Length: 299
Length: 227
Image (cartoon, rainbow over the protein chains, first blue to last red):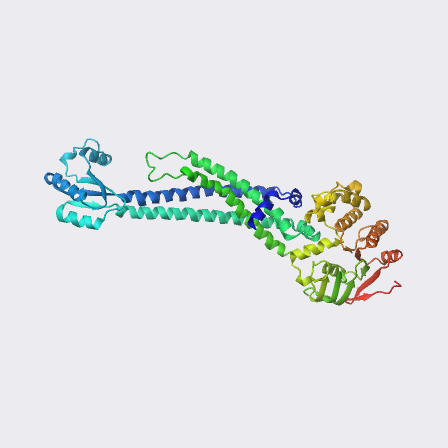
């Protein structure tokens, strides 16, 4: 049924198109509205996809790492670190574990304490970086073992700060999708208003067509074709501009790519191409419904 | 079987009854006049004949189907078999006269099969051959009436309904229109003309056997042959 309708829409007949007089200004408004909505939809889509990506990164990739801080007096620190590493060697779910060197720790602290810090003079806790294997480790079990054998070791499985970030990213993603849906609904509302206006303005034309034996679907088709193509064209232009704007966004890969990275990546660039098609479909349905409603009220 | 059959039909607008207890049969090939004072319900009765209005009581049967049982597409099909000429004929003002006359073919998807021959023949028949490319607003009253008649008959309908077809034209032109309608009737079409012009009715009776239906006091009376 739908395919037949689409086919009729494409082939249409030129004659059928001409029975409704051309309209200038409202046509441009529909084009503009579709374009603006498509432009916004590109960003909503980018937001959804990017926050989805972030949620995945924070949820999965960070979940496979953990850190142990060894807080002990300087003379016992090396021994306790050794002990902690030995425990980790025999812990299930640990793929690798290594203590950070003084140089690495200095790099980590440099942004806060400056470059010329004599780190060995400070009671800085030693950090052990743990990479988990696919099974993951049991943080509670490890904590108990560490508490018994290495009193100064504190396990941090990143869960504490990761969870709210993942949640925030998921919310952002949801927000993006809600925005996309709202944009589609707004486009439908605008097209419905424009179609209603066009149908009212052409009441006399419709009356003549009905008098000479035109069916409702024939009359509706003439309006549906117009609004579908307007929405399609407008949305195509809006999407193209939106995608161009995304391309021109400053690249943040090196500095803050982990936190920002708003934009499309890889095959996600194909997603916005659906926007014009969707806009066309929305216009098709909205005009069809408006025409059906209006025509029913006429003789 | 009558093409249009009214059985105890009544029609009331919000206020009161305009037509009541009307029973009329239009047989195929018959020629009827519908007459009566202004506001007596001639146009309403015409509208009941092509499904633009539904009776508030009784039954209108169009080509064997009760008008009440027809859906909107069925009504469209009925209108392809009933050519209507309105008192104030409406056209699509952005299309040429020729395109307007061919409109019934266009909307029924029969434009390609019939081609332009019939159309140009019809245009000369109604004397509009040289106005084919004009736009409707450029036509005179008489030309509009003739264009409307041509549009009403291009589908070769079974019934032609004309509501005051000579209302806006001079005597000469009304005679010409009438001759066209008589010619159609001789081709076998059922013709119903609403008019209050008794002169027109008398002029017709010389050429064709026409019956006169008069609306008076909301009812139909068959006027005498001696009119």
